[in-house]
Amino acid sequence: MKIKIWGCRGSLPTPGNETLRYGGNTTCLEIRSSTGHMVIVDAGSGLRNLGKSILKDNAVTEVHFLFTHSHWDHLMGFPFFVPAYFSKYTMKFCCGMHAQETIRDFLSHQMESPYFPVDFSQLRATIVFECSNPHHAVCNCRCNGLEISAVPLNHPNGGYGYKFVENGKTFIFIPDNEFGFAHENGPTREDYIALFRDVDLLIHDAQYTEDEYRHTRGWGHSTYADATDVAIASNVKSFGMFHHDPDRTDADLDQQVEFCRQRIRAEKSTVHCFAVAEGMEIEL
Ligand SMILES: [Zn+2]
Ligand SMILES: [Zn+2]
Image 1 (cartoon, rainbow, N blue to C red):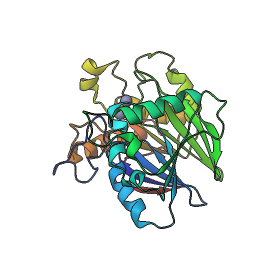
Image 2 (image 1 turned 45 degrees about the horizontal axis):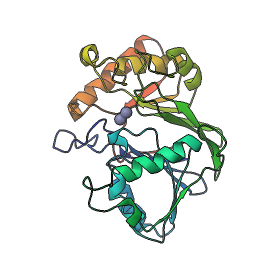
Image 3 (image 1 turned 90 degrees about the horizontal axis):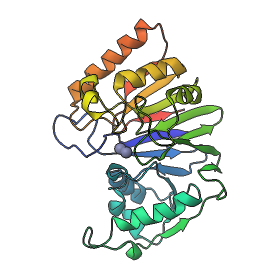
Image 4 (image 1 turned 30 degrees about the vertical axis):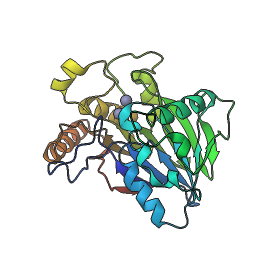
């Protein structure tokens, strides 16, 4: 599978000359299966640029959307996804009975008057709210060679991250997740360590510094030190820090990576650690 990052910032887009290298757009990932099928995870502001690239690629007329949760930073790009306005495209929204109802609701609500000038009903793409495995409460499906399963988030209002498996390679994407606080129905730190064990790539929330976390505990995000400790304990091959705080500059993120690499070396671990950047492409 090939993964392309269209947005990795948390909470709010952050344009400006201090965020040029890691990027300012909020969560959006493109995942291509080996057969070329496109899965999009989340509709943060990065989705706008992905939509523009789809318009230029004649091979793509169908996309399969997955959403992690309905917080604003993961939805705000959807009204600006230009393929949704053309009848040649089909958009499939997956993931469970409960999620299918809520996805329709939360995508259409944000386009309601007076919040947005164009109503959801004016979109021209074929929109399919149907899961290939609708009897499951959450996503658990095969999509053109990709095996996709949902992983519950420990985050306010809940939500799901996703595990993708293809040709023996595993990628887990958990954009918003807190290890230091128990949210309703959220898995424990030990549950996550077992889930992440030995995966090829883990992309995980690493939003806060320890100082920030003193007043943001319970807001649903991890410190980068804590996320690194879980990556070490799980022995993941590669750990990408994600959901960068809006206040984090490129220079801050460079320091963050250096701090986490030192922590990994001190533990004599072999985890490869990096900060996810907009535009990054990863092949597994
Ligand atoms: Zn978020
Ligand atoms: Zn969130």
